[in-house]
Length: 150
Image 1 (cartoon, rainbow, N blue to C red):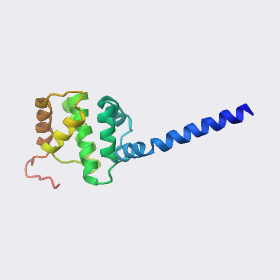
Image 2: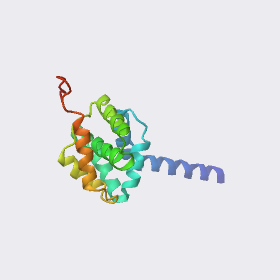
Image 3: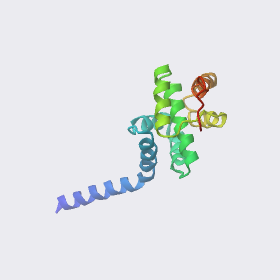
């Protein structure tokens, strides 16, 4: 009889946890599947953002609009290339990921401000983020007569 009570308690706990976190898991899965990556980099960023900024990012990512998905992906790109690893190889890796997922676009000033808001607890240098913006946006410049269509 005690085992039945404990099993019921465990089931209620697991179901309750899954119901309470379903929106955030769905939002994370939406972006990670679109980018073709595991949820680990996204979850890692959300953890490092802190409790308040992380939940704000999740609420932003939960919005069904494609523009919000684009902006959330750009914030992830800024974090991955601006904070985690600023190497040229990593920049090109994330650029290719964004292209494959059809989310590649130049980083706008509005996206920089959005990223600053979410990354506020990490206190990234604005000059470094602007330098990243210039490096990334240079990938969209025409090369020998080839023009990118956005």
